[in-house]
Amino acid sequence: DRERIRDVLARDDVQRQLQLQGVDADEVEARVAALSDAEVSEMADRLDQMPAGAGIVGALFAVFVILLVTDILGLTDVYPFTR
Image 1 (spheres, rainbow, N blue to C red):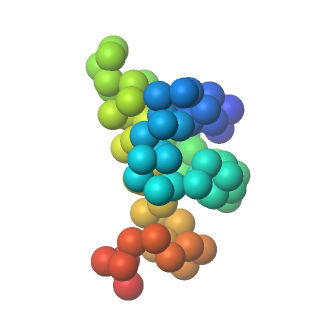
Image 2 (cartoon, rainbow, N blue to C red; image 1 turned 60 degrees about the vertical axis):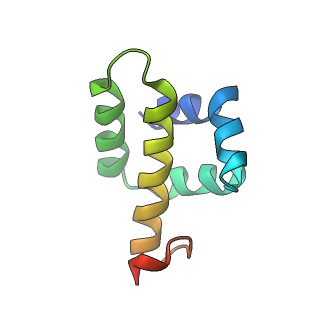
C-alpha cells in the first residue's frame, strides 16, 4: 500500500499540483514513510474507493491527509488550525 501511495504521489500531474501549493515532494515522501501501517492501509483504501478519473483529486486529498495527520501528531507545522 505504501508503494502504491508513493506511485500516485510521484505522478507528474500530482507533482505539479504539489509545487503549485508550495508543498515539497521530499517532505511528502518523509511523511508517507512516517505513517503507521494502519494509516497507510486507510489511505490506500480511500484511493481504491475513488471513482476513475479522480486521480489528481484523490492524490491531493491523500497529501492533505498526510499533512494533517503529521501536524496533529506534532511532527510538522503546516496547518495552523491543528493547534
